[in-house]
Image (cartoon, rainbow, N blue to C red; front, top):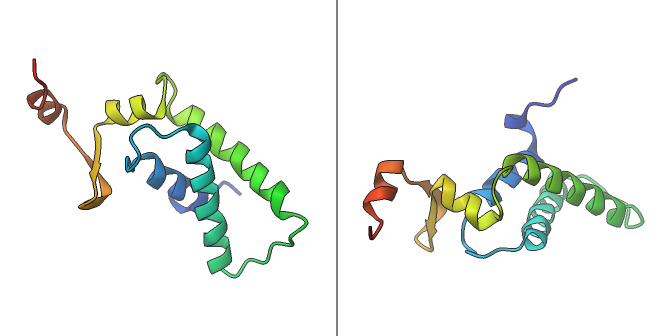
Length: 112
């Protein structure tokens, strides 16, 4: 069975964090930690029971999966901040969800 990205909770959480720029210079390790923590919370809410002895292994597997998704999604960009800038992701405390600027709007905001 093939999993569709639209229904994969890990991918949806990954994308939500990828396009949320609440921390401008976020390190990849911090990014992965937030995604994995949110996914583990999602599993908990869904009623999934994870034995304590397997939790570190599952979290490491999830970190590896998130890193692979990150590398594929941001290919060609040097950092998460550069990726977000290139995609025109703008978030402020008033807008908790990402707002995508059009190329024309980004050009108007430049000084030169």
